[in-house]
Length: 255
Image (cartoon, one colour):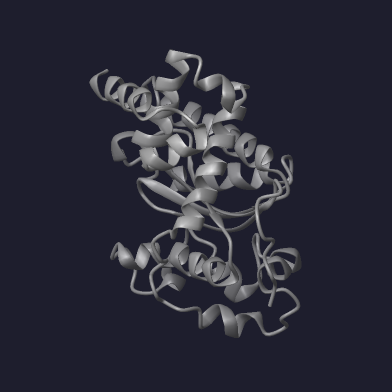
């Protein structure tokens, strides 16, 4: 089996999630799901993104991704989401935001977590009582693994299973145990990545946030209120006072 890199060196495996604004059913038609899948396939090579798995649900989607550069993941997701939003708004005759935030991502730091994430993504339609078995669902990569087709090629298999020749046996016997709640180390690593995405989005350095009241509020809204990171951990990372952080969060909640 493979061994995953320790620490963040601008590359790694990520569990990426997107969801409709207010949990709206933005993928509830077959052609909507197909449109988003086609956008994934269209842009993954352009931004050097390796898509290991996906599953399209009615109001959200999961992707398992490997990237050599975090910035490329951010640009990739921004492009497919913006293109889908244009398509969806035109279809619905509406304007405005389509997605709840840009996207959420979790850094995957162990082989066990990687395999369980792969299983978790493919089991989504079963847990939602949409199908009895993951092989019955058309809009995920489960059958790609069974038949070695679609996005599943030797590059994908080698990235997940290393030099294992009998990948299918491993794939079919991945533990069904739920992905564990993030431990402290993983939460800190995901916070680091979330902050890095925020820096890239606004083209700033983290040190500038503390000096800009408006930017600090937007940062608190995205990182603490929307993504759910703990104030104490964020304060420690920013090296900012408790009262200043609490005030910014409170103002966000009152907006």
